[in-house]
Image 1 (cartoon, helix red, strand yellow):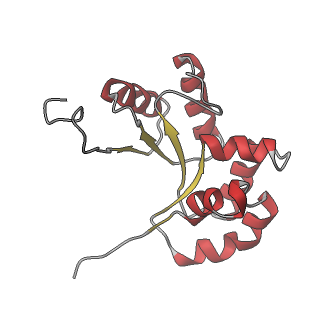
Image 2 (spheres, rainbow, N blue to C red):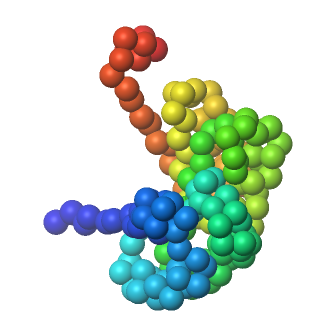
Length: 157
């Protein structure tokens, strides 16, 4: 019999999708963390670039403190940070040195899984950020491959 494991996305996707995209406070997350931990998820997609911005902008909380406290509350469940390969908090292109620092700080604050996507399908950018993650020993790096059906997105592309 093969084992099926689940990755929870409610703390990230649900947090961004519900409540006018302003989401849960750190206190809300810590209140449900023991139950999330008991489930035994393979991982929890916990926070993203825009999620960190929301924590600051709407809740006036420290996003790094949120990460640290959630890691402490769910020590057996790897928490994920989701990022694009070109930005961090905001929609302007972020220099590689800043992205590398972000990955180092994610690791230092207890994030054990990073997933990377690039809506522009820039594979070189995806690989660049994956290398940054591996350079700081993030245990699991996931590249989200996306596709589009359009005249531009051909097999050759």
